[in-house]
Length: 249
Image (cartoon, rainbow, N blue to C red; front, side, top):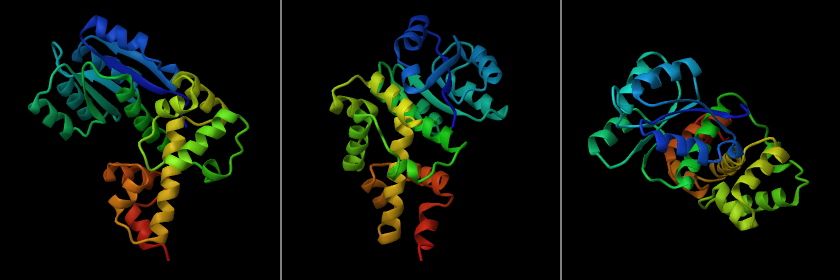
């Protein structure tokens, strides 16, 4: 598993770009800004040089807009994840963005929680491409830190609901940044990874013991997007949810 999620930010508005780089708690949640650019043309050069896991790009930029930049990156063989930023809704942009299968499309100004939720989703995808996590991470690991034990208990009782590191930190009456650092230090995993593993662990039991639809299992485990659920399930278990359910006997 990678220590940090490597990110390049491409944004033509100087103060927006610098504000995002300097004000968001990247390191606290296992992320690292490895490059920046002020337009799509320069973004191409930085991204191909740095090969980040994730590109966060404004859509409307001079010389080369964000979507055209990503289209060129794909043609050049770059394989990564993308989050688009924009100042206003535009159906044509949304349509083109969705065709590229980007992680999300955030309308500025967005909340930190929105971005963090997407970063955790990307971290899971990147981490799962590089390592398989033993079931002991889910059920048997001995958490010595009281706060982490409480966090794990909270996950086990509420995994079917919407959970973020912010909501758990609020439940524990500590800052989100402190919680993320402590969780990673004590367990060796980001909170986003642990949450995903636990949900898939519970989903596997449901698939074994019931005839629920895949979408129903996903929802029961707190994952609203059944396609995303299937993708993560396969990376953890090695088979799709449907295959897992069919072969349960």
